[in-house]
Length: 127
Image (cartoon, rainbow, N blue to C red; front, side, top):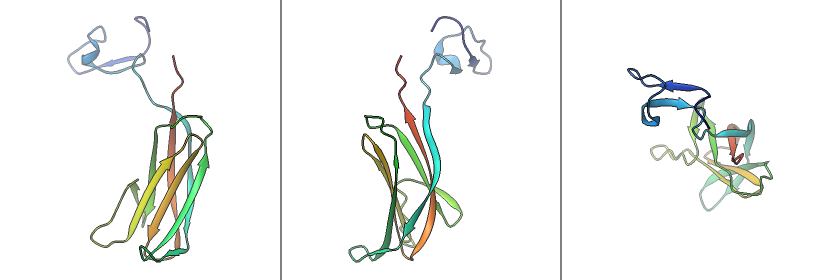
C-alpha cells in the first residue's frame, strides 16, 4: 500500500512516522471475519471414561484450508476461551478444532445440560 489509507500513531508521534510508532495502519495485516455466530452445545451423552456429559456441534466453513478461529463457551454466565478447564471444581472442558471444511466445538461437563458458544472464523483474502 502506498502512503494512503487509515493510520493511527502512538501518543507523541504523527502518522508520517515509522511503522513501529503506529498503533494501526490499514496497510497492516488485519484478521478478516469470514463467519461468526452463536451455537448451542447439547451435553447429554454420558462419557464413562471421563465421568462427564459430552456434547459437540459443528459449523461448516468449506474454506479449503485450516482457518484461524476463536471460540468462547458460556459457562454459567461467564465467557471462557477454548481449552478452558476448571481444575478446582472439575466442572467443564471446552475445546475447539477445525478441519479444512468444518469447525467443531466440544464440551464435557458434570451435569446434562445445554450451553452456548460463540465462534469467529477468520480468513485469508490474499493480496
